[in-house]
Length: 283
Length: 158
Image (tube, chains in turn yellow, purple):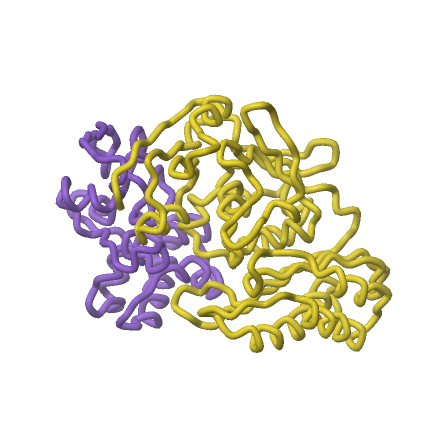
């Protein structure tokens, strides 16, 4: 890695003040697990990193007005062991258990998992399906951004360079059921070729409303509105398969080291139906 | 450059480090501790495992600067007065290593596993050790060693 300065502000305000909207070589660092890989590979050569570790009130998990609020520097492992999270949206816990490994989860943070914007990451599609939003702190104040609108492209977010994610908010799920499935291609790095997150409001197996999100196979994680429409009103395997077909037609898939677009199209077709079935708990 | 102060295997130490250096670099270059070693350099093989305040991290992805004020434990810090831990004894007895390169990481992660799950089932063991790779593929022996150690630790505490 190339040398850089390291600032360790004590408050969120100080941290934001140290960032520069016009200087992409200054970046925040929380757990650093993903950023370290980019720096080691020489893809990112920072002039200054602003560590968020010394900011005290940014690591917390609480329920506020029925919504789950998670501080951005909360380590993923803390989220994974939280009963509050388990009760609010158990799919988050299940997802975390398959995310990288225990050592990475001990260090990597919720905010980092979103700000990094690698489309192969597991949490973003799940949080989109759950209707979550992030609270973002900038120099002139804070704003809320739905996670569904956070990603601008491959490793790109809509955040300005002097903005920081301060917390994540997951709304009450009101009985909605959710699931996340991913397909890894047994490559050494274990990054998925496809991630599918779904959340459904259903009466038994009858889907009233579905949120269907794909990741990893696409440039950025995002909802498939056509597939969601196709899933609406379905009650059985034949219907969920039709939603899968619609998803395969709709998703803008990319070819990369995890597989060709044509291969991923088949994966989407199968995995969307499976994810709906898994969310419903149907046999 | 900056000076960091931390506890290393129970001893207060300090080191002058550059901001971009990882903890595993400092442990090897300044403290001659070679148990943690950088292998994949991506946090997925587990060879660089160290404990920070009792929690396992990948030392190759952890900036040394972040160790300031913390307590770092490496495999060298596990034995007390030359007496190996039950996990280390079990690895030796079962022959849970061939070349031994990955063994410190497995021993430390096995410790994390048995702290959280004193009576682990196969799923628990795989879950905790899935981030550690053994190129000699001594996995059956490693799992056997973890089970042997778990049994002994349990017997010792009851």
